[in-house]
Amino acid sequence: MRLNGSKSQFITFGKRKINSAYKVLDSLIGSLDQFKYLGVNLASREASAKAYLTYVRPILEYCPTVWHPNQIGLTNTLEMVQRNAARWDHLNFKRDFSPALTLQNLKWPYFASS
Figure 1: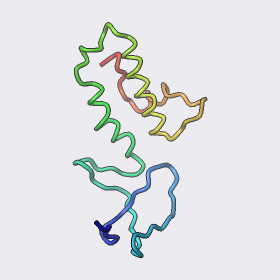
Figure 2: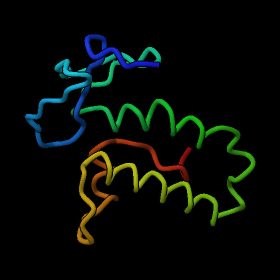
Figure 3: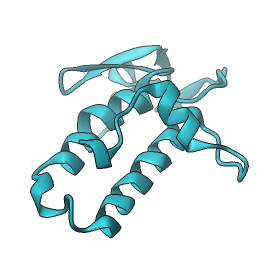
Figure 4: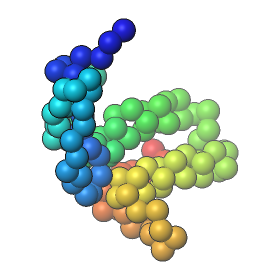
């Protein structure tokens, strides 16, 4: 199976715009600012939040009676996943980063209140 360079494109996710040129079989690949995947328009600046809210959060919310309200440890685990998603959304992995403040700004609901 051969890759068709004329049908290939790439998108860069992150805060910094990377000006790179990629080639496949001597064919220059074009870059995209956004693309549609499974019915969701993903733009490079909004992709992580949309991906989390579209693909991850619904799976975590499915059947909350299994884990809520008696098992606090499971709720804390779900909150940890959400805090990690907030870190990825802001591409900030420093120790002084506050996911709680970021979650308030993003207006993502907490699992304990779901």
